[in-house]
Image (cartoon, rainbow, N blue to C red; front, top):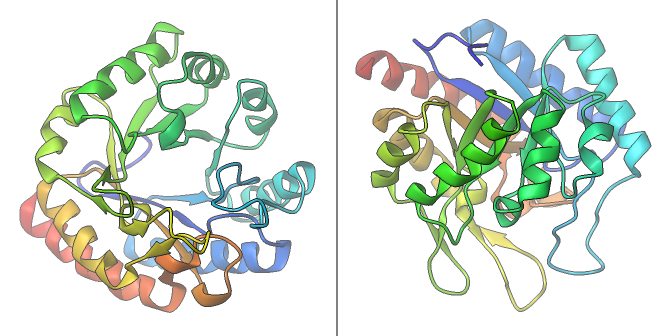
Length: 263
């Protein structure tokens, strides 16, 4: 799955969910322009539907077909690979019509049928490490994809449960993840979530995104995952832990300096 220059990190970024065509295209175009200037390989990420929300009243999407058509337009206009989540085996083939990378949500990373369905599409499978799993345990999720005949897999670290309403990233785990001989990615936004709030809306600590990202590059993660939005306070999903889009270029420039220093 060598679709990036391993002398540099790659970026998986975009809004949490497809909100509408206009804002999705704007975010994708902005990130693409930045990454081209900085020579960073870019995957555009947006969920076509959010199945895991704190409240039944939370926004979950504009409709599967419509959202996937928006992602198809991003791909056609910009030529960037698309990452999107799937939540059930029957979604794999549907999402694979557009997506280049099928992402397995952290809470579902042990679901054998889901992993195998994603693998059988032939697409890259990005498995998010469960908040409840050790880094060592991710070898079994990776094996499920490979046993289904698909070598194209990567793992994303997104924090570990730390009490009821917090997460922590244990950077010691990168060595165990790297033993799977696949790209390893650090999710710098979801790792800063503060889930299960009494109000039914997930909180976050976006002021620490830069700190996590810098540490991730320094210890050797191959990719950085983050969600970004022009106006996080008014984003329809996960706004509390998003990076403002205007801050993205400055952050990536700092990460490149660190990468160049440690390669």
